[in-house]
Image 1 (cartoon, helix red, strand yellow):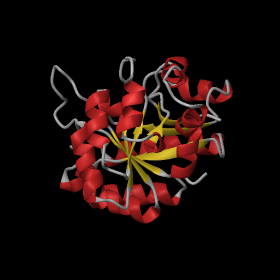
Image 2 (cartoon, helix red, strand yellow; image 1 turned 90 degrees about the vertical axis):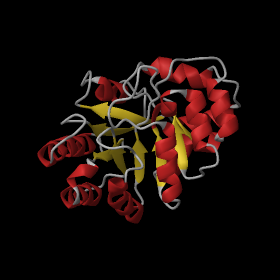
Image 3 (cartoon, rainbow, N blue to C red; image 1 turned 180 degrees about the vertical axis):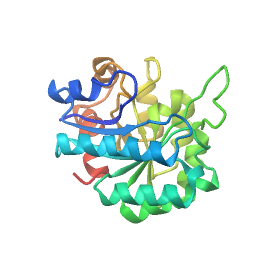
Image 4 (cartoon, rainbow, N blue to C red; image 1 turned 120 degrees about the vertical axis):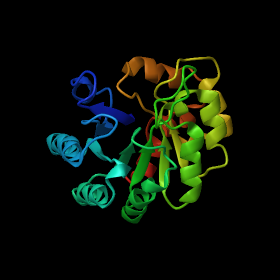
Length: 240
């Protein structure tokens, strides 16, 4: 079994999630929509999240929905998240509207924690500079430390695998997905040593499936460790 914990609809090629499912590349996928871009309005969020709900209806049992949020919207944004979780979504998608450890994120995390939902936070390390409110892995780790009872996902190694591994080390409620980042020798192994195989999750972030899978299959891991990354940890995380 393979569970892709990081996919998007309404972003890039719209046929990617459908192809992954109908070609049986992934057995289960976790999806969010980024309609509205970096600073979505409430109407954008509703459109994005309604799109995810339709995917959940179309592929029952095979799609785990993540609600897109904008912490700048305050109480309206909180109510939208509550609507999505009540409708069956199991995750929250935080992109670049604010830094991950901005206090405006806290009310959304509290709702997620009460619902047992997982918070997927974007982070990236760029040599040419971040977007205005683009988190680094340290921002996500700081947020996770503030809410030790909430489960968080650090997206795509944190954008630079050595920095991501260091940030997530010692933060037991912070999982790391293996999408993104250029493949380099030992990248998966370094993450396993610093974070632990039990906190690693397979993901593609809409990149080529076999490229992302190859990083796991080529790593110096046992078969049991690969199985944990490809599906077992996600099964536990989402209580499947």
